[in-house]
Structures are given as structure tokens and as C-alpha cells.
Image (cartoon, rainbow, N blue to C red):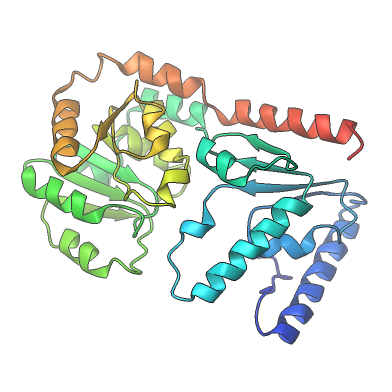
Length: 318
């Protein structure tokens, strides 16, 4: 939900400057009412660079979860301005946090303080879902084996690969959980929607996701290979492991680093073979290994890692 003080911070030069001033004033006012004198400023988008140094912050942090230069946008000028804003932001904050080794390499230089904190899983929720074993009715109505993806459904996925998989195994069910973004992939989505064994179940609330994921037989990471996906740290990879599922992925670096737990398909044929092996596998065989790997990558651990960084920098008098 957006704050009642929400304002866009872009637009024509004069309008954009006016909106940024109003935006900063609203943040200062909210901080004063909350009794915050010297906030820790935490930004996650290049467009928020204008806030750094203007809020009396004790510490400024840029949390980077995507490689924005890999986004496909129709306005190349806009993309270039975004990249310029990000470089300025990286150089102005006290520290940056990235979620993947690839982002670490892309955003570091000799002067910047950049730290790796990967994404993780709400392990307790998935442990509870495993014990409950309560498959939601709309998922239970779909025949198995159920191979599924949970997350935003759009152009970052190799939707054609999913279509090939569905055609190769009409006896399997492909389940897609999440919001659908039809931009730049309308034809591929229409093709999938026309297939009887492909099921779009829509967006689920966060507290519902563990029951849906544990109701699958195989977790899929069917990403396109491009600049954007080569820098990601997929939340769902850890969630699949938290459910004890076998996982099959295209060759994104994040999955390769977990090759002990994730099968990699280099092309459509090997991706389908990996899915066949996953479906044929006795799920109990490596269940404990997968769950243990998820238990080693929890949000509690990540929060402690970030807290240590903040204490170190605040203690240094930044």
C-alpha cells in the first residue's frame, strides 16, 4: 500500500524537481512525527538517489536486488538515465548490499563498500507447511505429477520452453503461481493458456505460498538467459528446497552455484530430461538434504548478517 504522501519523483525537469522536493519534505515530516532524528536511509531503486544526503541520515544503504541495465525498455534514453542515476547512487551511499556474486562484480570498484547478502527463505513457514501437508483445493484438483513455478510470470521466463515441456509430456501438469505480466510476451502466454495441461492459478498471498509449493512435485526455474537473469538470486529456489522438492533450472549462475541440489538444463532437451529424472525420483531420497540446505539459508540468518554490517559501520562513525 502506498503512503498518502506518495508522489512520483520523475517527469519534465521542472516538474520532477518540484515533486522530489515535495517527496523529501513528506519523508522528513513523517520521520519527525515518528521521533526519528537521524534515520538509516535504505533505498532500493536508482530513482531514489536524490534522497541521499538530504534526510540527516546516520547511514545510507543501497540494496540491489536486480541488474537494472538488463531491463528491456522501449525508451533507451530512460534506461541510460537510470544507469547514470545508479552510478551516482553507488558512489554516494555509505554501503551497498547485493544479492548475487554477479551483482557484486558489477557494482564493486576500489572505493565502494559493497557486501553480498543473498536472498533466503522463511524456513519456519515451509516447515509448518510440510507438516500440515494441506494442499489447497485449486491445486489438489490438478492431476499429478505437478511441476510448478511460483513468482512473477512474464518475459524473464522462457515461456516457449514451458510450452515445449507441456507438449512433450501431456500427462504432466504445469502449474504457474503468481501475477502475470503480459508485456512483451503476449503470444507466448496465449499459447500456454491454450494448453490443457498448463494451469495458471494466479497470485497468492505470501502466507499461502508454502502450502502451494509443498503441493508440487517438482520446482521449476525456467528463466531466459540474459543480463537480467544472470544477476538474480531467486527466492523461489530456496523456497522449493524448503519444501523438499527436486528443482530443475535453466543455466542461470545462481542455480549453478547450487548444482548439488538443482538440476541444470542447458537446452530444451536436457531441461526436459532433468524434469523426467525429477518426476521419476523417489522424493524421500534427497528430501532431508534439500531441507537442510534451506535451513542454512533463512531470513533470520540474513538479518543477522545485515545487522552485523550496520553495527560495524555505525560504530565506525560513518
